[in-house]
Length: 292
Image (cartoon, rainbow, N blue to C red):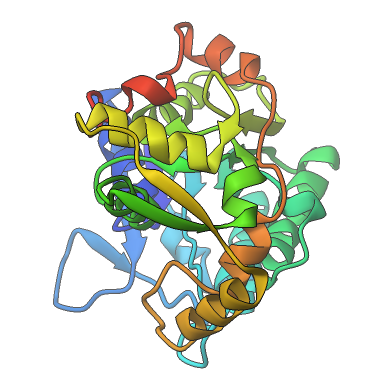
């Protein structure tokens, strides 16, 4: 198939790109062009918010994957445009162009979250699902739990924490459960969905076992060969202060929205992803050895 991939330069998108190529597909990358690159279809995800912006870019395309996502809202990169308005325009253009297979990479928990990230991602998810329900296309929304792998910002944060002999963690991190999924399992799922036209709707993409985020960090520390760390609970006022300080650093993965998202469990059934892949997914205790 000839596939248009949005977000191929990101952490998840780059792995999806490799998985699609390994499966024998042709991949055309749509994204911001910093330098002249004939391999990239130029797209401005802050401005291309109408279906007409996309129709020419969809010529010769058989399927579309949207893996664009940002953690922080800003004037230069408005989250509503990038997460909602532009994806909705892309999905509408796919319906007009007769492109049936459209995959949206979202996140687990957006359907009951209250952060700008959750609200804007959910709006695009719902639009794609509505088009699918109406028979306009065959849409699939993939909602992973925490995604772990090489070059992931949150993955690097967890590894940095795992190296510390003393951890001072917020209560949310100590209690909230996650179900980490290896990025290669997620990318393989996207590639397999290209050959599974009857898969429509929402796919929960989680690893095999849920555990508190603090326990996941402890598992990474053990995989690094270190003795267990001492763990203290960060008082709530200091937790809020640290998150607000993170708000001032645009590239920081730790901010008020991250704290809010960590305040709820991020778990789901493991069977759907394993059934799609046809093999067990990578367990948390093996993620470092299998990290790519």
